[in-house]
Length: 107
Image (tube, rainbow, N blue to C red):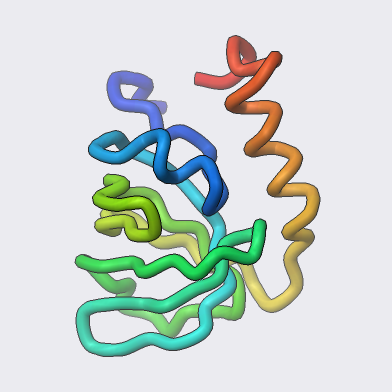
């Protein structure tokens, strides 16, 4: 595991705190166009993912790792399909823990 440049777990609300840094987030894919994906974060905010798109079709939920380049956008580096059923509420709680009292437990 490469720990030299860890990606912070974020949801839509937390994204603005990490502009210019590597982040990881799960989105519900709404629409995929040439060069971008429109999605909904696990806390119901609209997010635009730009840059590299995966070779395979995206499932309903996908994790993206990349650089936060704005309050509501990420420049993608890596995609992982998370399937069509995903517990967004649990992921939201994970984001809160990873950026709150227990952040020392996360890389």
